[in-house]
Amino acid sequence: MVAADYEELVAAALAAPVEGWDFGWSAGRVRGSDPSWSYPEEARALLATAERLLDVDTGGGELLASLRPLPRHTWATEGWPPNVAVARARLEPLGVTVVPTTDRETLPLPDGSIDVVLNRHGRLAAPEVRRVLRPGGVLLTQQVGSEDCAELNHALGAPPARPPGSWDLRTAREALSAAGMEPIRTAEEHPVLTFHDVGALVHHLRLVAWQVPDFSPERYDSALRRLHRRMCAEGRLDVRAHRFLIIAERPDDGRR
Image 1 (cartoon, rainbow, N blue to C red):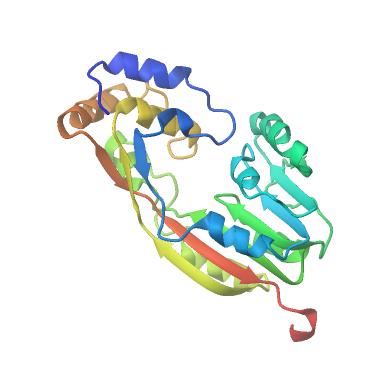
Image 2: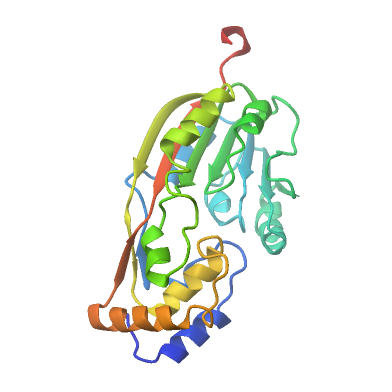
């Protein structure tokens, strides 16, 4: 979907909502980035026997709500203030306690109190995950690696979002192992993410604010116009995402 009016596309993207973690505005205009595994299916399998669940960095609670029925004791943390109200409105009717967090290195729950920790694209504080999990408890995390959409930053003339090689399956496994967790399943992929018009690209960069922290259409005007012309000619802009999955267990105290 490509329109010829650059100003119209960008203005619509700037007027689109960015509360919660909802990419619905650009549905059909951005495609891909999904790895071969299904995070929701992995999560549902773990929740089938869980009694106490924590979802870290829940965003607007969209994904967690889609996993219902949820365990009777479910908590969700969120550190971005605009998302907290959205998450509460969506999750509290489902019996979920939403806890605002300001320190992303700390999980505000007691030691050994959780059966399953879910973390999709959130901050992975490995020592805290181990602390809040009961012995035998499980972490499921899907992370965005440091190579994610690096080609987009290059195309815009922006610095990398993260130092190359700084966050990937290897570094995350090492962090979890050092904290006393045992990875039991891992995977890593670089699926293609396709943008079909510059408005969808601008909306994405507003939602994923850490990709280009100083982003604004004014600051990157010439690069965006160049990409707009490219998408009009080619119908798309392809970049590579970076995703990895880890399922890890806190060992029983008697084994460690």
